[in-house]
Structure formats: structure tokens, C-alpha cells
Length: 102
Image 1 (cartoon, helix red, strand yellow):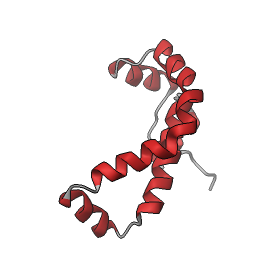
Image 2 (cartoon, helix red, strand yellow):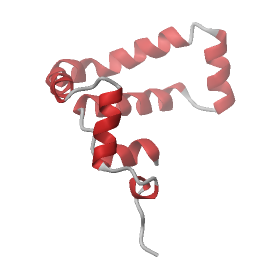
Image 3 (spheres, one colour):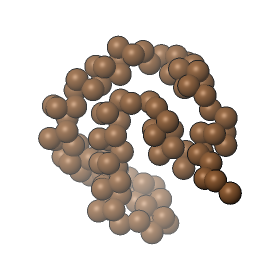
Image 4 (cartoon, one colour):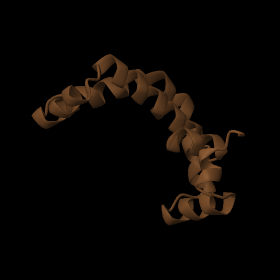
């Protein structure tokens, strides 16, 4: 049996992606602006993520969720940084859908 993409399994078409972006109020110009910010945000991504988790770890409930998931902060920060950087690519295409839904 051939590998079927998540997008194909869910029958998400290019028009569906366009419509979903429209629902969210995201325009092609918005995506271009995000891509233009990448050179400024990428060098400080690690600091942004560190501050995000520094803030979150101030809350007992946040810490409890992390502890229940048996995740290490370092692992979470690495995954969050990768996600943040992927957002700066501002590419909503088949590869994006596969990463987000897989």
C-alpha cells in the first residue's frame, strides 16, 4: 500500500488552505511580512523561547502539565524553537500541513 499523506487522507485541498487562511484573516501580504521579520527574529529565537518558558514555569499549573507529560524543559525548548522558526518561514503549503497534522 502506498504512503498516503495526511493532507490526502483528510482531503485538504489547496483551496481549503486558502479558505482557512482567509478565515484566520491571514493574507499573502501578512505572510510576506512574517518572512521579512525572520532575519531579525531568528538570531534571538533561543532567547525568546527561554523567556517564554521562564514565564510559564512561574505557574504551578504549567509546571504540573510539564511534569505529567514527563518532558524535559530542554526538549520542550528545542521543539518550541523549531516550531517558532518554522512559523517565520510563513509557508502554508503541503509540507506545512503534513508537519502540523502528522
